[in-house]
Image (cartoon, rainbow, N blue to C red):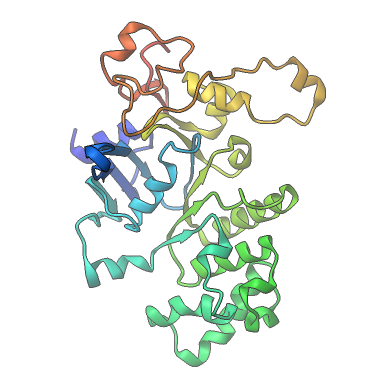
Length: 338
């Protein structure tokens, strides 16, 4: 079996057809400089040996607690942060070592939707300039056609064409996120990373924005990596779910299989924290609450990084890092006891 096939099997993806995205052994480390009297030096292992693949038009949800490395994975794939090591194959080309004009050719096809639209959108630029900037940079259409294209994009994301002349401070949180989505889609990408796209919004607005993302993904046949800490937010939009903890992948599975039959203790605890609207079912459910806090990536536990909080951990868990193994067809977990 060649390296690409091994990567696909290890990531839990189907091997039919060449994947759009193939991430192999991705690592992102940050070196801390020594402070007063040499204190504080070390390496923060934000992402450690992450491998997965994505097919064209597939939606994968990347979930886990804050500090698990989810956002870092998304930013590193798009080269917003430089990987420490590993391969990032996009449509067959390893983009990890690319620089300058070579990487710029891929920017149009890979876009990012930020968690905080107010912080990620320039307040000095009008909505028309914000959305049209990518069209200018990549020279996609003539300058005179940009206003019509921007107006069409605003309509597509549920805003009015006359909003083209407004500034970002004139919008609500949900409207700002719609502007951010329009900006990401302006250049017709094939792959989008959405980093906690609804976490800063009211619950009622969260549903609207997730419905919008789902509709746009289906209409444009986008491959989408959605970063989230709430499994309930991505339950109905994701084809597969990848669970991360302290920089490592704990479980990958089709969404329905993961929600109804989780194979990793960490996934079980995350699912048990999802609110249930039915009060009878909510009272009958047995919560699986984890003890303690997520350890520091500066000094991760040996062996299985989840063992310090795992209810079924044994001394054996401290000896080796558990590999992703197939527990059921297409369902992979990194646990030696399940």
